[in-house]
Image 1 (cartoon, rainbow, N blue to C red):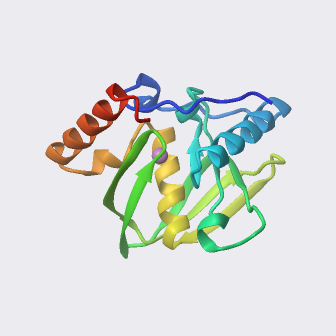
Image 2: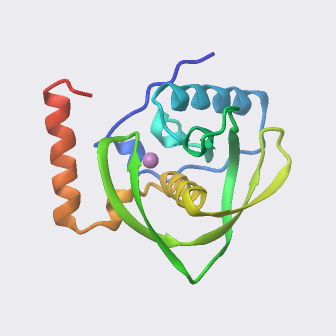
Length: 173
Ligand code: NI
């Protein structure tokens, strides 16, 4: 299996909008497997293709460790599309494997419904609220070249970018 390295800010791939896949081929499935591995190793609960420097619309998530489940519960999506979002909003603290060790409150629609192709290439839908809702919106943002810090004031965003830069220079990442 390909071992993927997760890239961190600043990197052009993190600011780039990814292209849809034609379908879930064996190579896309291999990519999903590799991304899940990289995400579990990190560890994290979500990872988008941009974060492993691949510019197709593929993301993976698994919230089981956060919800005290013992069994892994991976969700793989290709070409995800938000088809419904609630007017009600939700604020939650978010972090990102590409912006290591930095966290901030982000406001998003509380409930979303997402249409996507699953691991087997079948059309599927997911309705998400709570942590899963924030996670899937955060990962779809990545596919559009958007980061959670883009929702913050430029002052806060620059502070976070400086902190990551400092951690890199001190070899603490
Ligand atoms: Ni992220």
